[in-house]
Amino acid sequence: MIDKNQEFNLVIAGVGGQGLITLLKIISEVALFENFDVKTSELHGLSQRGGSVEVHARFGKKIFSPLVRQGGADLIITLDFQEALKSCYYASKERTVFLINDFLSPVLKGKAVRKEGILKNLESFSKEKILIPASEICKKEIGKEVLAGVFFLSFASFKNLIPLKPSSILRAIGKIVPKKYFDINKKAFNLAQSKK
Image (cartoon, rainbow, N blue to C red; front, side, top):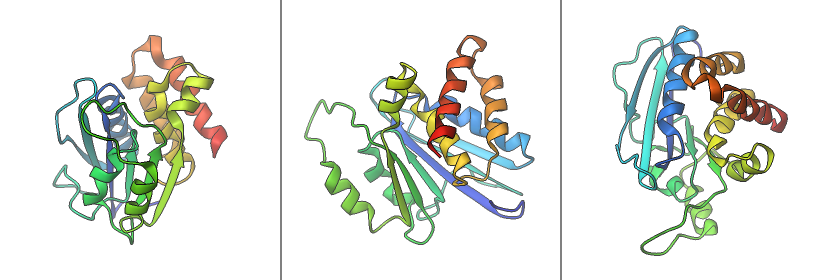
Protein backbone atom coordinates (compact mmCIF):
# COMPACT_ATOMS: atom_id res chain seq x y z
CA MET A 1 0.00 0.00 0.00
CA ILE A 2 1.13 3.54 -0.64
CA ASP A 3 0.99 6.18 2.05
CA LYS A 4 -0.90 9.41 1.45
CA ASN A 5 2.33 11.25 0.51
CA GLN A 6 3.07 8.98 -2.44
CA GLU A 7 1.27 8.60 -5.73
CA PHE A 8 -0.05 5.61 -7.64
CA ASN A 9 -0.15 5.45 -11.43
CA LEU A 10 -2.55 3.16 -13.27
CA VAL A 11 -3.10 2.57 -16.99
CA ILE A 12 -6.00 0.45 -18.24
CA ALA A 13 -6.01 -0.56 -21.91
CA GLY A 14 -8.56 -2.41 -23.97
CA VAL A 15 -11.02 -1.94 -26.78
CA GLY A 16 -14.33 -0.15 -27.01
CA GLY A 17 -17.20 -2.05 -25.44
CA GLN A 18 -15.15 -3.46 -22.53
CA GLY A 19 -16.32 -0.84 -20.01
CA LEU A 20 -13.08 1.11 -19.50
CA ILE A 21 -14.82 4.44 -18.98
CA THR A 22 -17.07 2.92 -16.30
CA LEU A 23 -13.99 1.42 -14.63
CA LEU A 24 -12.35 4.85 -14.62
CA LYS A 25 -15.40 6.35 -12.90
CA ILE A 26 -15.34 3.58 -10.28
CA ILE A 27 -11.63 4.15 -9.60
CA SER A 28 -12.21 7.90 -9.23
CA GLU A 29 -14.95 7.32 -6.68
CA VAL A 30 -12.84 4.83 -4.72
CA ALA A 31 -9.88 7.22 -4.59
CA LEU A 32 -12.16 10.01 -3.34
CA PHE A 33 -13.71 7.70 -0.72
CA GLU A 34 -10.19 7.04 0.55
CA ASN A 35 -9.22 10.73 0.64
CA PHE A 36 -6.78 10.70 -2.25
CA ASP A 37 -6.44 13.50 -4.75
CA VAL A 38 -7.24 11.85 -8.09
CA LYS A 39 -6.90 12.80 -11.75
CA THR A 40 -8.08 10.67 -14.67
CA SER A 41 -7.96 10.81 -18.44
CA GLU A 42 -9.32 8.93 -21.42
CA LEU A 43 -6.28 9.26 -23.61
CA HIS A 44 -7.36 7.93 -26.98
CA GLY A 45 -11.07 8.64 -27.08
CA LEU A 46 -11.70 5.81 -29.55
CA SER A 47 -14.24 4.13 -27.36
CA GLN A 48 -16.56 3.00 -30.14
CA ARG A 49 -16.94 -0.75 -30.12
CA GLY A 50 -13.71 -2.44 -31.19
CA GLY A 51 -11.53 0.70 -31.18
CA SER A 52 -8.42 0.89 -29.02
CA VAL A 53 -9.02 2.65 -25.69
CA GLU A 54 -6.57 3.66 -22.99
CA VAL A 55 -7.45 5.34 -19.71
CA HIS A 56 -5.21 6.72 -16.98
CA ALA A 57 -5.81 7.20 -13.25
CA ARG A 58 -3.35 8.84 -10.89
CA PHE A 59 -3.97 9.30 -7.19
CA GLY A 60 -2.06 10.32 -4.07
CA LYS A 61 -1.69 13.29 -1.72
CA LYS A 62 -1.57 15.89 -4.52
CA ILE A 63 -1.79 15.07 -8.23
CA PHE A 64 -1.22 17.72 -10.87
CA SER A 65 -1.52 15.81 -14.16
CA PRO A 66 -3.96 13.10 -15.23
CA LEU A 67 -1.50 11.37 -17.55
CA VAL A 68 0.92 8.65 -16.53
CA ARG A 69 4.42 9.52 -17.76
CA GLN A 70 6.65 7.22 -19.80
CA GLY A 71 7.91 4.42 -17.55
CA GLY A 72 5.75 5.70 -14.69
CA ALA A 73 3.00 3.08 -14.35
CA ASP A 74 2.75 1.06 -11.15
CA LEU A 75 0.02 -1.15 -12.57
CA ILE A 76 -1.14 -1.74 -16.14
CA ILE A 77 -4.38 -3.63 -16.63
CA THR A 78 -5.00 -4.82 -20.18
CA LEU A 79 -8.43 -6.19 -21.02
CA ASP A 80 -7.24 -7.40 -24.42
CA PHE A 81 -3.97 -9.31 -24.81
CA GLN A 82 -2.69 -7.25 -27.75
CA GLU A 83 -3.19 -3.98 -25.86
CA ALA A 84 -0.38 -5.04 -23.50
CA LEU A 85 2.16 -4.29 -26.23
CA LYS A 86 0.77 -0.80 -26.78
CA SER A 87 1.05 -0.10 -23.06
CA CYS A 88 4.78 -0.85 -22.79
CA TYR A 89 5.51 2.87 -23.20
CA TYR A 90 4.22 3.42 -19.65
CA ALA A 91 5.97 0.42 -18.12
CA SER A 92 9.17 0.09 -16.13
CA LYS A 93 11.04 -3.11 -15.32
CA GLU A 94 11.61 -1.80 -11.78
CA ARG A 95 8.05 -0.95 -10.83
CA THR A 96 5.33 -2.05 -13.25
CA VAL A 97 3.03 -5.02 -12.77
CA PHE A 98 1.01 -6.13 -15.81
CA LEU A 99 -2.40 -7.67 -15.13
CA ILE A 100 -3.37 -9.18 -18.49
CA ASN A 101 -6.65 -10.61 -19.65
CA ASP A 102 -5.95 -13.78 -21.63
CA PHE A 103 -8.38 -12.64 -24.31
CA LEU A 104 -7.78 -11.62 -27.93
CA SER A 105 -10.35 -9.53 -29.78
CA PRO A 106 -10.81 -10.51 -33.42
CA VAL A 107 -8.39 -8.63 -35.69
CA LEU A 108 -10.17 -7.23 -38.75
CA LYS A 109 -7.13 -5.98 -40.65
CA GLY A 110 -3.60 -7.25 -40.48
CA LYS A 111 -2.41 -10.12 -38.38
CA ALA A 112 -2.74 -10.68 -34.65
CA VAL A 113 0.51 -10.85 -32.73
CA ARG A 114 1.05 -14.24 -31.12
CA LYS A 115 0.68 -14.42 -27.34
CA GLU A 116 4.15 -15.89 -26.92
CA GLY A 117 5.63 -12.90 -28.76
CA ILE A 118 3.73 -10.44 -26.58
CA LEU A 119 4.84 -12.13 -23.35
CA LYS A 120 8.46 -12.24 -24.54
CA ASN A 121 8.38 -8.50 -25.34
CA LEU A 122 6.89 -7.71 -21.95
CA GLU A 123 9.89 -9.24 -20.17
CA SER A 124 11.85 -6.05 -20.89
CA PHE A 125 9.09 -3.82 -19.52
CA SER A 126 7.62 -5.43 -16.45
CA LYS A 127 8.48 -6.36 -12.90
CA GLU A 128 5.73 -8.98 -12.92
CA LYS A 129 3.13 -10.32 -15.34
CA ILE A 130 -0.11 -11.91 -14.18
CA LEU A 131 -2.11 -13.59 -16.91
CA ILE A 132 -5.72 -14.52 -16.13
CA PRO A 133 -8.53 -15.48 -18.56
CA ALA A 134 -10.87 -12.96 -16.90
CA SER A 135 -13.30 -12.68 -19.84
CA GLU A 136 -13.62 -16.45 -20.01
CA ILE A 137 -14.07 -16.74 -16.23
CA CYS A 138 -16.75 -14.04 -16.17
CA LYS A 139 -18.58 -15.53 -19.15
CA LYS A 140 -18.53 -19.01 -17.63
CA GLU A 141 -19.41 -18.03 -14.05
CA ILE A 142 -21.66 -14.99 -14.59
CA GLY A 143 -22.64 -15.10 -18.26
CA LYS A 144 -21.08 -11.69 -19.14
CA GLU A 145 -17.49 -11.36 -20.33
CA VAL A 146 -17.77 -7.54 -20.20
CA LEU A 147 -17.41 -7.83 -16.40
CA ALA A 148 -13.72 -8.71 -16.80
CA GLY A 149 -12.80 -5.11 -15.94
CA VAL A 150 -14.63 -5.14 -12.60
CA PHE A 151 -13.17 -8.59 -11.93
CA PHE A 152 -9.62 -7.29 -12.56
CA LEU A 153 -10.02 -4.10 -10.52
CA SER A 154 -11.35 -6.16 -7.61
CA PHE A 155 -8.64 -8.79 -8.04
CA ALA A 156 -5.96 -6.06 -8.00
CA SER A 157 -7.37 -4.78 -4.72
CA PHE A 158 -7.59 -8.20 -3.07
CA LYS A 159 -3.99 -8.99 -4.17
CA ASN A 160 -2.69 -5.58 -2.96
CA LEU A 161 -1.63 -4.62 -6.49
CA ILE A 162 -3.50 -1.35 -6.08
CA PRO A 163 -3.78 0.65 -2.84
CA LEU A 164 -7.58 0.76 -2.80
CA LYS A 165 -9.69 -1.20 -0.33
CA PRO A 166 -12.06 -3.87 -1.66
CA SER A 167 -14.89 -2.46 0.48
CA SER A 168 -14.44 0.94 -1.18
CA ILE A 169 -14.50 -0.66 -4.63
CA LEU A 170 -17.80 -2.40 -3.87
CA ARG A 171 -19.21 0.86 -2.50
CA ALA A 172 -18.13 2.73 -5.66
CA ILE A 173 -19.65 0.06 -7.90
CA GLY A 174 -22.93 0.64 -6.05
CA LYS A 175 -22.69 4.36 -6.72
CA ILE A 176 -21.55 4.28 -10.36
CA VAL A 177 -23.31 1.38 -12.07
CA PRO A 178 -27.07 1.52 -12.58
CA LYS A 179 -28.95 -0.20 -9.77
CA LYS A 180 -30.26 -2.95 -12.05
CA TYR A 181 -26.65 -4.00 -12.82
CA PHE A 182 -25.29 -3.86 -9.29
CA ASP A 183 -25.90 -7.52 -8.41
CA ILE A 184 -24.12 -8.84 -11.49
CA ASN A 185 -21.16 -6.51 -10.86
CA LYS A 186 -21.09 -7.68 -7.25
CA LYS A 187 -20.83 -11.25 -8.55
CA ALA A 188 -17.71 -10.25 -10.54
CA PHE A 189 -16.32 -8.60 -7.40
CA ASN A 190 -16.95 -11.76 -5.33
CA LEU A 191 -15.52 -13.97 -8.09
CA ALA A 192 -12.27 -11.94 -7.96
CA GLN A 193 -12.13 -12.45 -4.20
CA SER A 194 -12.39 -16.21 -4.65
CA LYS A 195 -9.46 -16.16 -7.12
CA LYS A 196 -7.05 -14.47 -4.72
